[in-house]
Length: 52
Image (cartoon, rainbow, N blue to C red; front, side, top):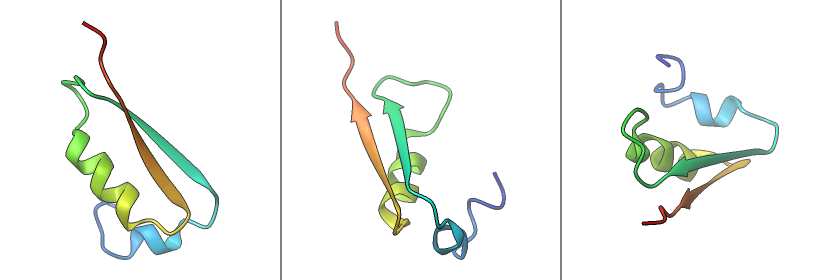
């Protein structure tokens, strides 16, 4: 996790990557997933809405 927080990490990823995040996840930081997805040139993030 320390490696992924470095500014140079997103440019090192050279394979297509899709990150999925659950809208009500209480374990993984949704904001961190979103920021990483925005910084990656080969990756994207998708937020999956919760169903009541």
